[in-house]
Image (cartoon, rainbow, N blue to C red; front, side):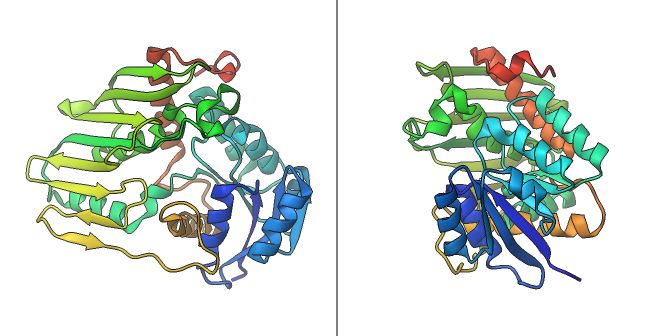
Length: 337
């Protein structure tokens, strides 16, 4: 079986870490063949560092490259739709960083287009492919936690200096940047979509949120209490509580450790990449790359772990939270849910 040939769009931090992560996978299965960035020099340096044979200024050349099978989209949030659609239109499969799009209407338009083109498209919610998440779901599926009653999850770092978080023009705010993680882990635990959402938030001068608290109500009375912050460092754990016990995911968005229902701490160490990652546990991006390969080889258009419906549901929760706290994006007037 020929290796899956990857191109990377943008040469920023998360793209760097994705390239590092892919380098830990067998070369017989995955190859990085091209990178595109807004500046040619940035693309050249990125390609040189990661041993990528071709580099381009801009993204159109990636779409036109006949030797690219799948594109990892690591641009700022409000460029996800346009870049991903360009790649799908050119016949490429797409793994797009979270949030998939700025709102549910835009996400639905993109996923519908992917299906029309017959191409795999997945929101890169890498958390769900970590062994810790798989273990959690297995425990829940066996009934080891009993009925899930509550999820407590907090996610926060001092990020007010980071442009992609603080600027509305880049699709900023913690609901889109951090909230996706808290929402998805709640849905992963309950295996359902919330039926009611209550939210409050704090906005910056640009009109985007620098922190939110929300209560997600699930069928049969389950509740998820979520909090995000771009001001404070929070515990960054997710505690899944059932009638028989609980499991805690430590560093829940990229957990290499969990405290199991019996109190045992389970560890899932990551390999060491050839080039050092920048962000915490980013070698774990390898798991979503391997899932992408599995699904493409199977001829599937989505992953059951981050299905199209999952992405639409998460986007819908984000839309509801933003509406309640008064955060509007230009896309909200163009793409209706």
